[in-house]
Image (cartoon, rainbow, N blue to C red; front, top):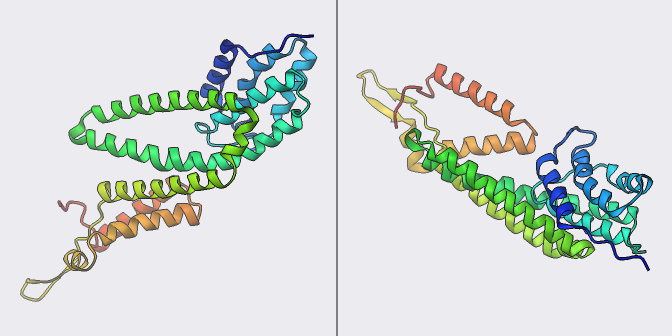
Length: 279
């Protein structure tokens, strides 16, 4: 009876490093993260299968389209590492079709969780702290962000990869279903609160528009009137406007910034904004 094949720590670590550094390798709209996935699976396939024909056949499994949030998506690579090990040991319940089905089933839900957790929550929190530390031109802010971001992402991705390898096919029950939906919705809510707090703290939009009578006495200060009804209403309006452009109209962040530049320029020309006004 042939000895059971077991992936070595060396191969698993190399697989993780390949995904960590290369998940966007040769990125394109047609393939997205497919080639990065192939790089991650290569050391595992080479260790599990002896002949080039077997290795080639195994790698064909991972040529299918793949795209997810790369940090949280590390767990999918770990899961397929465990499934590939089971397949190499002759497990009749695991074949190429099963592996691809699980990959396809996980990449969507985990993309939602990852985008909400990493992009919508973690990054705004770290940037908010870094901006506070950068006041007065201090370099502590950017150093803090670079160090903390890389530490969190490195150890987080590594933990998810090896946890996925341990779980194998059981990960599907945990990552897909009502429990995953509840987690995703909670993260989305938390991320929305964080983004709102960051916007309220660091964004300030005010108007210098005012009217004076013939005697030169001011009888209308628009900013004071707005503050008496709804403080910071212009800031809220601009944040909602940017969200509407990028979320509803699918306008890119670069184009959104250019639109804001045009709005600011037009506001200065008509006297609605004063570029030299100090608050």
